[in-house]
Each structure stands twice: as C-alpha cells, then as structure tokens.
Length: 542
Ligand SMILES: O=C(O)c1cc(C(=O)O)c2c(n1)C(=O)C(=O)c1cc(C(=O)O)[nH]c1-2
Image (cartoon, rainbow, N blue to C red; front, side, top):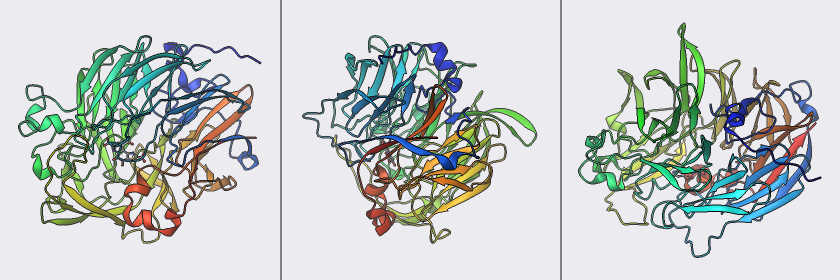
C-alpha cells in the first residue's frame, strides 16, 4: 500500500527519542543511541529472527545506520548510493545513485564510506565524497537541490551524516590528512543555500589565531567528519573537530585551536560559545571528532549537565556542557600520550612526541582507543557502551611540505599490539558515566569496529568483526543472543524502530573503513585480513 510520508518537523525531531522510527544518526539530538523500546528484551531476545535483508554491490566499508520514518527506511552505501525501503518488509522503494563520474576519490583517507542521511520536512539529505550535499524527496527519491561546497580531489571529502535542525542541514568536512582547512557548514534545508560556515582553524586575527605559527592555519586540518549533537535547552550545537595538519607537531608549535576539540556553537550563526580541547598540540592523529553525547550525570555527589566523548586518545571525557569545563577524564584504554590534567587541561608526555629522527612508542595508536563507531548511553542508568580497540604504535617524524591533494603527515608509523592486551585487539566495555569507571568488559580477539545500540529492553546490540550481531545484557555483559554469521564483518551502526507493535533491529555488515587500510599488525592478523567483504543489510525481529 502507498503509505503517506509524515513530514519530519522540528517538533518531531525534538521528540525523536520517543518516535517510533529512528529519525537521525544517533536517534535523538543528545546523541544517545538509546531507544525506549522494550518489545525486544532480555527475556525474549534469544528468539530474534532475520525478517529481511539487502545485499549491496559494494566491497568497501558500510557505515550507515538505517534511518526510519514511519514505514520508510533509508540506508546509504559506499560511493554514495541512497536506498529507500519499506521498513517493515524490505520492499525496495527507490534508489539514488550519486554521479561520481570524473571524481578521482583521491583525497579520501579511510575508505569511500558514508555514514547515512538526515531527514527534514519531506526531504532526505546525504553528504557526498565530491563535497556536495544533496536533498531528495524522501517519498520518491526525486532530486530537490544539490549544493557543492568544495571541488573534489584537492583535500576535502565528505563522509558525515548530516544533522537537521531549525530549517538547516549541518555538515562537516573530512580532509585532516591532506592539510585541508576544516569547517562545519549549515545549509538552508529548503534551498541548499549556505547559511554559515565555521572554520575550525581560526584566521590570525580571530580568537585562537595566535595558537598557530604564521600562515599555518591555511593548511591546519581540523576536519569535522562526524555528526554533532544539539541541546535545545541552551540552543547549542556541539561538534567535534579532528586532527591538525601536518601530523608532526614540531612543524606547528602551539595548542593549534580548535583541532582535537569540541566546539559549542550557536546554530543560527555558527558562532563559537566555548570550546574544550581533548588533545592540545596533537602529534598522534587523535582527532576530537568522536561522538559528543549529552547526558545528565552525578559525579562525586554533584549533578552536572555533561557532554561525554570517548576520545581517540584513550580518555573518556565528561565536560560541563553549559560552560566547557572538564568534570573528569578517565582512561578507557591504555593511554600514554595524554597523561593527566592540569587545571582541567590535558597534559601530554614530551617523551611520547615523535620528531625527525626520534621514534616513539605510545598508546593508543592513531586509530584510537576507539574510532568513529559511536558509543550509546542508557539514559536511565547513565551507563555507556563503548566499542574499544587495543592498539599502540611506533611513530617517527619526517620532512614534509604541503602540496594540494597529497597527504600532509610528516610522520611514519606502525600499529602494533597493546602489550597489556596480548590476545585481544578489541572489546565492548560498559562504563558508568557518573564515575568514568568500567562496569563490565567483553573482550574480543578481533578489533571491535561497530557502534552500539542500547534499548529499554535491557539489551545492548553491536556486531563483531567476524560477523555476529551480539545482544548483550546491559547490566552484566552476558551474551543473550548471537545472530547467524553474516556474510561480512560488522561495521555499520545498529538502529531500531517500530512499525505497529513490532520492533525491528537493523544493521549493516560490510567490513572496511580505516582499520584494514591503516591497521598495521592488526590489519595483517590473518583473522582480520581474511574477513570477507561485501555490504549486507540485515533486519531482525521477534
Ligand atoms: O582527518 C580526517 O578528515 C578523517 C576523515 C575520516 C573519514 O572521513 O572517514 C577518518 C579519519 N580522518 C581518521 O583519522 C580515521 O581514523 C578514520 C576511520 C574511518 C572509518 O570510516 O573507518 N574514517 C576515518
């Protein structure tokens, strides 16, 4: 039957946490990845069965969550195809294949991925590898507008899932490995016209401009390649900023604001309200882009409106989201580059800084104690479910000069095992956000490169690299159910929705992304090397 398509209004997005669908990247503006559904719960999750599936034509990383409005479901593929299905049955509705003819796909560091769509009004939005944002009619797939932000192949690319709010579609660019000057931009949702652009590296005359050597801002990196969050109470948009360029920090003394930071922005103008820098003068490619989850916590007896992020640098940060002050930092992985805090600012170990002719060994590797795979947070218990990677690295400086469209690193490196975890490349951890301390740990011999989904049914979902979707007991970490083995390793972000009384879980298998390309010893581990490729979207229900 031809279902009506209910427009995605600001009111619906503001109440997305309670919607029957899954209206945005992390379900709601807080970035929780938490669904209030309990139809599937700890007592019946063992009965989950596959109800439909879809195989894509691609062998690269599949990272998109299913975004669902009513009975309409949207997923994207590598190289920017957008597929619409009937959410309950998997009936294909339409496909949009973005035209990448003539695009070299050259300045894309970590696989030709896409992290999914945003919905607003009657439209669906996708950011593309050739730096466009496209708006399509969600019901028909018919193009509405198409705005190019940058030429392709000269440093910029886009892999981000857009965030829609208040008549705007907000996106951020990739390009931190190519000396692109990063930014976050807001486009008018109905016309595609750019409303504001916030460069993440200030010009010399702007606040923070004095944290860079002369002229360095033009090639200073600071990409913004993961989706932010939004606090309606204070009307603040939070967006993570990535690594500085070049990677070798001795070439750019200073804190290098606002790289490796979270920015609190006015969504009407893009003006900066405050910032917090996770890794000052980063020389390890630790980015600061990982999820920025808004959650109210109680720490040492005091209530806080917090923003939490499990950073690539191995520390879990809780920041006061009203003023940008550190509440606490706790290690969630072996972390020797950042060693602690002074007056709320991270302190780094000078002995762990590489230079020309100086090789160092430090943890985590540049791939991070956790990479982009989002944590989820149970809003009732304030427990976060954190995909974790156990790696360290050697790193050494070398000479580099900027050339448009080429890598701008100035370092060579190798990912190796974390000696503290001789048998495990990864884990899923439960961490109490009130304390920053571990509640349980599920170790994995393979890296764990999948986001997590938390539900009111007391079940946490996440997929393993060897192709099993796991259902964990949120309280104990006990595995309550595992799917039959998927045709590839899980990399996609799990999501859940209801059509009528039925609850569905959807997730992409489709190994790829940064780990196989950059993973050094981990990528060469035969169990990782032999993970079969191919995109396969699965939907499960009772
Ligand atoms: O600096 C950047 O612009 C940038 C972009 C991306 C991306 O857009 O996917 C990644 C990274 N950096 C990165 O450092 C990284 O480890 C990474 C992993 C992945 C992935 O999809 O698995 N993307 C990216």
